[in-house]
Image (cartoon, rainbow, N blue to C red; front, side, top):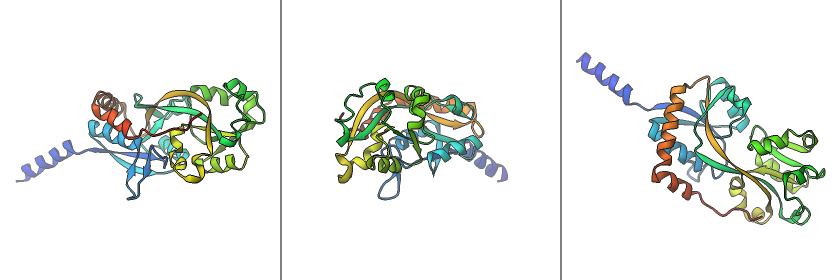
Length: 254
C-alpha cells in the first residue's frame, strides 16, 4: 500500500504544472481586470496559450512596471511580458523569442496638430526646442527612440513619470507637448467621451518585436528553451491569429 501511495505521489509531481510568478501592469488592452475582476488582455491570452503548451501555470502579481523590473533582478518575479531587449536588462534577464510586435508613436493633443504639422521626422522633432516629451519610467521604446533619448540636446526636454494617467494630465495641461507609447495602449482612454477626439498621432516611429523576459536569478536556460518552443508552436497554430484578431480595434488616425 505504501509503495502504491508513493508511486501515485511521484506521478502527480511529474504531471503537475510548474508555476511561474508573472509581474503584470494594468495596461489595456494588453493586461487588465475586467468587470468581474478577472485578468484579461492580449498579453495575458498569449501568455496563457504559451504556458498551456509549455505545461506551466502563471501566478500573476500586479505592480508598477518599474517594480516589475526591480523584482526580476532579485528573482521574486520570474517573468514579465511585452519586453524589449536592452543591454541593461540582459544583465539580469533572459529573453524569449518574440511573440508579437508593438508600435512606437508620438501622441499629441488634436488641437495642436496644426501647430506641429511641420514635424514629420525625428530630426525635426529634435530641432524643435519647445517640444517636450513625456515617457514612462522604466519603459523601453525600441532602438530608434532609445538612440533619440541618448541625444544630449533632448535630455532637458524629457519628462519621466510612472503612470500614463500622469502623462495625459501633463499633456492636457500643456506641460508636455507629446508623449511616446504604443497607440493601442490608449484604448482605455480613447473609449471615454472626454478623450476620444482629443488625441492625435504626430509620428509613427517603428514596429518592434517584444519578448517575454525571465529572471536569471530564479529561472533556468532550460525553462527559457521550453517557453521558446511553446511560442513557436503557438505561432504555427490557428490559435495565434485568433488571439490577435480578438484584440483588433480602431487606432488613432494621423
